[in-house]
Image 1 (cartoon, rainbow, N blue to C red):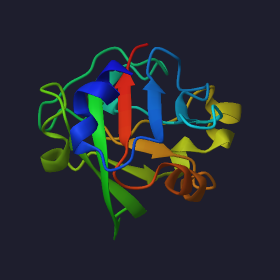
Image 2: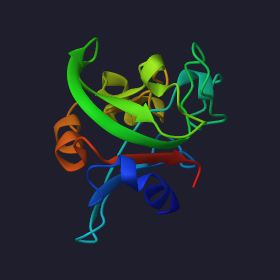
Image 3: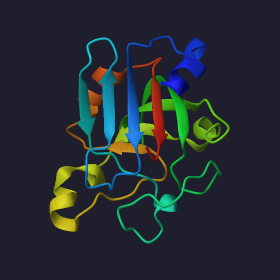
Length: 159
């Protein structure tokens, strides 16, 4: 909530926000979209970057904002426009903190991926890893986009 207050002027919408709790393993739903008006939330699986978990343990070990790190970044992100890219429908993110201000240049986005589907947990015990993006399951992307939308905040940290 402190990040929402700190960055409130940059956000077009403050009714909902996402919280990515990277303290949880990738085998658990840890991308929470919270309706701040209605008090409800939805939770989804989300992958973290390969540079954040080099040994592929399913746990995020470190954050990075460095280009080429393939790591997840921490802090507040502003959800921006949608586009169709390498991973299909995707949403650009703008990093609002010094710990993630390279997000746009690094192409850190929200997208879907086969390696973020629930069957990965059944077969491997954890999700695959992204290149630092918030990758959600293919069947979850439409619900994530509908609930989050542009002009809102994603906050990512070990909470």
